[in-house]
Image 1 (tube, rainbow, N blue to C red):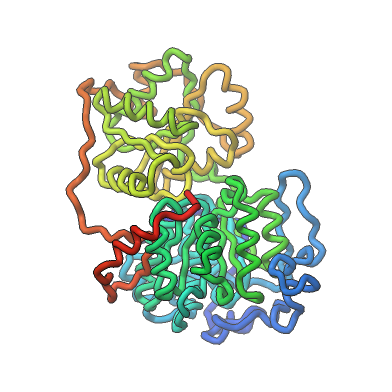
Image 2 (image 1 turned 90 degrees about the vertical axis):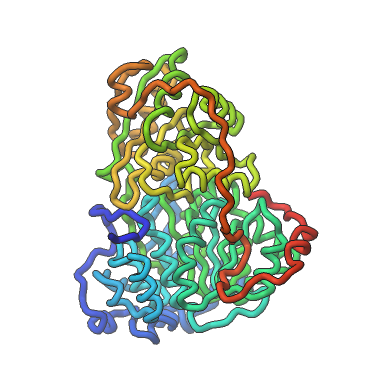
Length: 522
């Protein structure tokens, strides 16, 4: 079974081309071979061209210069950049790529047998050092698309203390941990050290990881800025920078921090930007920081995924809670999205009182609480995850077939990312939204913006139609109390380098506690 953590799609819309042998591709403009993997893109004008800062004194933000005269997008639209240097064609197998043998062996060991569309299209170019702009729905394989190239190009190098060589910026703690988890087997195979840098946990452990040397850092912008301000991390040697889910970083107000961090990385380095949606804010990043990027898009509309069903359930105000409760009592796991953390806490408490094993996940929880809740949900100890948008990205749960918007999302991007928790890796899934009478017009507009034609059904608690769509049933009515699962020897990996060969020294825990928590809570 191909465990490529993503859904294969036939909706690939960019960079299609015939698959030739790697030897044939070496004749292409971007180059190939081991040398091509590390070389700058002379054919693309990178080597010997003016610095990205231009007249701005090397400032990273000045590298764009309008991308060959491409105008900025109007309104909220995204204008794709013009690629000056032809892209290498996609591959059909990882063995066609010039990656270290240990990396290929690790892929086989992890059950990753063939590349998915966004990987097949972007890896030949990213391995050759090209900047990349990739768009694909959640679960389309973006993590390995940028991760394999980043690790392969960093292999064999050794980071100095506090000076990482590659950086992945993500919007949330959960996504940071997911990216770290996905890349760790391959980083270990190449003897590369990773550090996860996020808020909400002790900054002391992260300081130790960086001062011990980490080639790859996966970080949220706020905590990374804290560490830079403390002089515990410097980005001068970062040659590869990845922005994952760039649109959400913009939506969350991180853009000033993101641009400030990009201005600190080594001039002339490789930049890769991956996102599920592209809008005006991302357009600015592309124009400013990406040089002659290869552009590839998979599933331009997440609603186009054929294994995902979309339902709008029209309910009356008085029936909404009972309908929600019956859906939560179904057999199998479900994620329920609400607008606020207080509403999530209230619903989780009410569900526990009627016999549904529910737990809330939101930004008001500590990182240890959030990690524990996710672990309990993944192992089945909790069957209902009541979440705010903090869970809309960066959470991968196998065999999750239902997502419920108890409170409809505010825009189509939130809808797509919430729904992206299901129908992953080719599995089927259902997204249900409860719609009150006064919300119907707005939901119709939102679905149109998302490119989705949903099935609309009027339902009431206890009806067969509600059961048919969601598996809803009456709860047991017997209150349940969640008890912590048996203690497991799970290393607290957030912030620690992935050095399986090196154990912690006595006394580190005390020093980490004394270091306290950093300023960033994200």
